[in-house]
Image 1: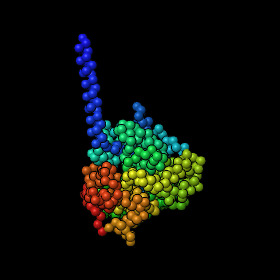
Image 2: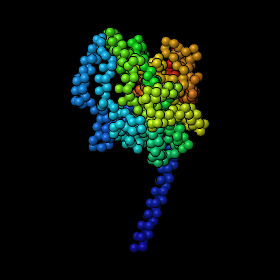
Image 3: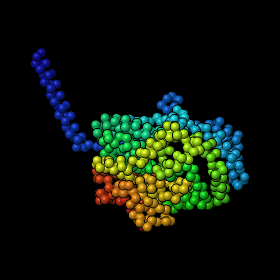
Image 4: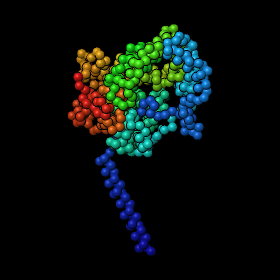
Length: 496
């Protein structure tokens, strides 16, 4: 009996020692293969919005049913619009009033000025675990954030990549506070005290706030800004009623895309031909929209159509270009559409201050050894509805903002002191000239999986090479200025 008991004890001792040896070996192996966890912060539309999310009543955020269709015909707005298209006289006031009766399904997306969602709207995919458990997301799209996440998973393993989903309408400061909690969970799960943060589009605004509010946590190893809105978007000039609707500008926009767009998202050559066939129709529509938004009618259009849908959405206000902020706020306050005692007013001013501190914040990160990279598109026109229409862009975000300060020009007016061979970009005004890359002809977030653009993003986000232009070029084929080639898959150095 004692012999058997002694044998059992000895076996347990051997088992425990073996486990300790194995555990030590495993830790040593992991130590040699340590991977910094990556957190991707997506932009607008990456997470779908739902009414009553995560309940049995979950449904699409915007429901356009029979009542909407009935109103569509009972107001006769369809007839009025068709009359306008063929050049008949239509009252801009009456048309705007009719349009305002149809927007009810869309107003649920708005916020109150106290910062609360009008409807019970939110997302259903707040994942606190790695993408190893959400591989279906990686195959949901071949471009944008899913493609970015997929190439990162290829580089470091899906178990080391997290996606911070959030409601894109929210105040980005609130999102950043939630991101801090999310990162705590990532560090706990991974055992790492550092993370690499990759902000995409609007996600760069969230990243900017995290750096500003949580920099003292000293948990950032790398900060990458992809097609970033952190310094604004030209379209947000609409908050100061900066509207330009011009037929020649519109046609130039379409023709430029027909000539210069090399992606596969749309056939702009065919669209340009259609516009050419319906020249008189385009003229009628442009002339009418100019009447709707002229000095006499613009306040009505904003108050009855625009503001009820998006007027209080915090994140849209936070996309106002830094230098346009005071003018936008002043106009909205003077018109009575923004209350200076509201949470919205306080919130957008708070983020505006974060924008102003971002340069110093990033320089402090670099001083402390954090790798910083900025990637942006150029060579495509921006949306042609504001005075920013001639800015070179990635079709959504102006390059001057996404690059944090580059001086840019249109293709018809090259710069004298350009640093890009095509004459469109002068990087000397960039806040981070040595850490900013430019992809010509690449549409906003069109980092299609399996293409050079996607591989470049994967490299920038994971390489051990220092993230400066000279080091990256020495280590790889990637230069500061690269251009998408016909077919939409390969990049080459920008030529003059």
